[in-house]
Amino acid sequence: MRIPLTLAMLCTVVTYAHAGAIRGHVSMPPAPPAEVRFKPYAGRASSLAAPERPQRGLVTDAVIYIDTVVAEPAHALPVEHPKLAQKGQAFEPRVVVVQAGGTVDFPNMDPIYHNVFSVSPTRRFDLGKYPRGQSRSITFHKPGLVNVFCDIHSDMAAFILVVPNRHFTRPAADGSFDVSELPPGRYHVRAWHPDFTPRDLEIVVPASGDVALDVSF
View (cartoon, rainbow, N blue to C red):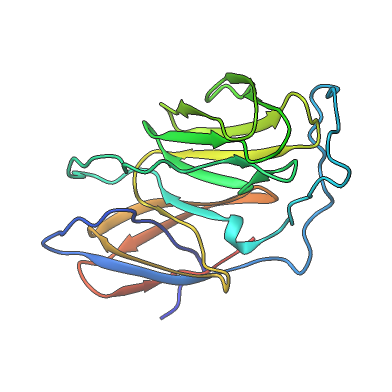
């Protein structure tokens, strides 16, 4: 039986006495919505002749995560930090996911200065100007969405989604996902995408076997 819902998680493997699996597919509209330009400030320079514009509406920009997992064993955060680079006068990747308590690195790969900042309530920061070859880091302590900009280039925008635990995933290029080793129980699942309205879903994971969950934005 296929349930018309969707998806989620796993970064590190924990073995449970009983565990189920979630397998499914994320589908997107044929075209993304009209672009929303983030310009909360004037911007002071446009140093590259042809700044890159990240493609919108990609299925790989989706994030699926579970709000709460009861009796979750303690585990260490990943040693390697996710990176939100400045490259081609754009942020790369457009979307970064980090678990609450985790750190994101911000390397500058452009031959110009950038000044990365956010005024989002989840995590406000201003990294100041720094040149190519340098990097800064920020730790994100609480779940929520962080909109990221550059104080020098007003068209640059990216998203950091801080999730509450390690149970999250990103779809593959074909929209497929595969989550295993989830303890049995009822869960609230959120499917998020920067260009579309989030989807909130309720699922029940059995003690063994697969649950089929698909979602359409």
